[in-house]
Length: 113
Length: 114
Picture 1: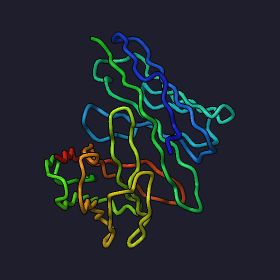
Picture 2: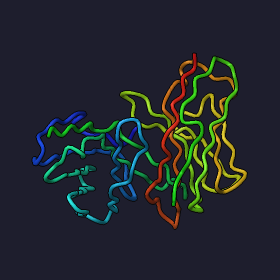
Picture 3: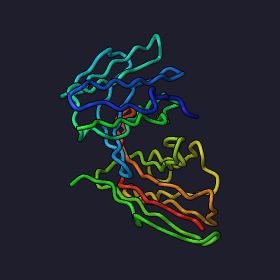
Picture 4: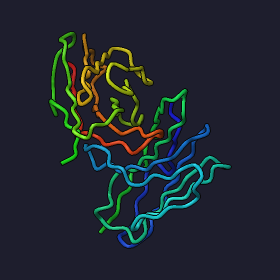
């Protein structure tokens, strides 16, 4: 069951520009997480936002969550070539005490130097 | 160093030859899971384990088995691999603490079944 869906699928920008990617999901969640994946490597956790939070910052990352619209956005400010990667949102809802995470298909970000 | 390790990293095998991909974590995490990643499909969960001797199916469990005899290890077993199981596999772990926390991923195992 693919719950989180990222948009756009691909994004190409110049170094220094901001990158915004969005995630939509279908059912109620406990929290939403964003991950980054460099080509062929494991995913790395970036940031977690809880269902009762609306915005969170971590360095150049800004995440928002709108539970009424069931959507989240990840903003990377002042992008660098090293930000080139795929970005995934992951959601989890409590299913009888078990937390089953689901990942979207990802947004592929290319930052040109 | 806190980490999740997987072995092997790369494997080419033939249809029907049983194989095991090992996964080990050194963070004393209760929750472990296996994912496969295919182009255009993102990550899909195969199996997960909430704790020792507790395992359950994810979204795509067919053709796979797992076991959780020790807290640190969570091997993925393909009893009779088929070409449609060619994929990139990731093991992940996280602590529970009453909520779903960040997952730590292994480096991946690229499997090709001929």
